[in-house]
Length: 398
Ligand code: PLP
Ligand code: TYF
Image 1 (cartoon, rainbow, N blue to C red):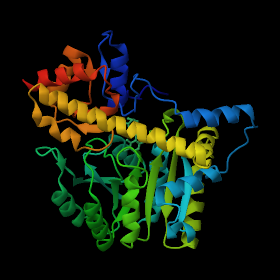
Image 2: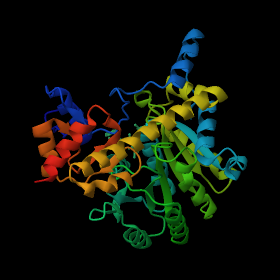
Image 3: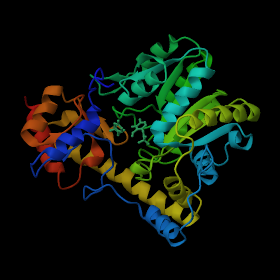
Image 4: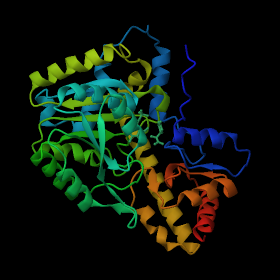
């Protein structure tokens, strides 16, 4: 039966980790995958999460099924985190939030919903974007087009190019926007730029699909969600947010995400929610219990929530310090041109390194980066920073 089945290549980013794991060199560094590592090079288990986990274990409960759309305490807390507790949308019942299998699950369920609901299934993606965006929406039947986003020469956003391309899209096109900490470039919009984009989306009747995978990793919980607030303020009455706690709670394997759909009225939101539930019923029936219980346990307990915010701030500030550290060391080694790394947001940086330079980093130094030159700043630490800076300086000399 399977004689015609072809072998497909694996995910290039996850494949890097396999190559890294197989590398015997003691000095190796994995700057490939987008995971936040702590100063000891480990994936952190947040103290707030550990405390909830202990109390859950102490009062262990039976594992019935969750509702199709997930744990109510989790979806409510998620809505408040994304839109703000006092958002008029929440009071009006216009946001339908569903627990999903990670942020990836939210993208796919959201794509399935929109393919049926919108006039045509076309998605506009930033050039570049996270590769899985293309794969997930493509698998859901979307046609994919690009909009200009990154200016490689200036290592930052090409905002004029972005506006010009968005302006050319057909009304009803879905536009995927990274709320903050753009993956892979680290180039984000300013508040003023978000306002301009929101006005254009409204005027051109484009449908915003916000991907929020790194809330709290750049400026703060509310600050990193400013795009959502500005879409609402611009008078856009319907849009979608796919969010993830993989990074902000360091709960990668628990697969904790959410799909939030904003509709023009509470009745519309109810109808949309019924469609979302139908989609989920035919894919995985209902989500899993543990990760959602952890997140809800933290977010609904004021002390644990404060502890989590402190821990999140710690992760964010460490990333900022690592950016500063890398830039300072490269400047000291005669490479002040890497100054732009300081301006980029979140855990990624499009370093400007060429594929040949990335290959040299791997072959000569055991330093793994994505072929596009994307590095994960959160995989640096005080121990490997000198080594990485030296290596980058060496390959930059040609
Ligand atoms: N969206 C972006 C931009 C991401 O970088 C990621 C990465 O992990 C996701 C979505 C998916 O998150 P999750 O691991 O929760 O599926
Ligand atoms: O971009 C990254 O590195 C993260 C992790 O198929 C990731 O978003 C990468 C690839 C993938 C799933 C997650």
